Image (cartoon, rainbow, N blue to C red; front, side):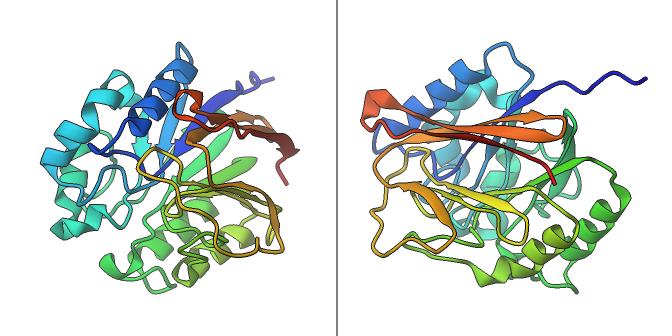
Length: 269
């Protein structure tokens, strides 16, 4: 019998780097501590550095805190990266970490028993996210060719959110394609909050925009599928990806205030 794939760690957080405060440095230090000697990776959920994702901003406001685990980073671009034309600062920063064609912003990797899909939700900048778009066609082919028991995808703009920016309809084609393929998890940022949803179309979604730039107060009622949310705590999501299931924990950066936590586990379907 083949060996059982190991349980692996994936940390996730977005909306991170800023030279205006210290919360982002606290979240980065937390990531360094949690990754430790594991073979884990960190999914950066976009808006990696503010305000425009320039090379100078990466050099001054992101790299010093994240350099110790730079090789573990698995980023996707957010809208602030595209404040620099064609997101050139982002693609220069992560050139050695991003497989595939420069400028695409989507790729896949295997992590333990899981297929991980890093996608680009800046649909208007990349030729759309619908069935005729390059990313959609790539995703459909990648899903059809894979036989992983569990599938996780992440991108910047949340398909569902009760935060300030709200739900993003442009990502619906990607969401539906993943749902039809039986994907298990989708992670996003963009809203500077934490929110966990009950499965929608079979997919559980987390919003983790708590990387240190700022926090947004919730301004309305939670969505019907919201199971937990917080707008007062910086931190990151720690996922233990097991063969056939996963466990989650929101880990607060307690040295910059806030004590919210959220834990649970579920099986892949």
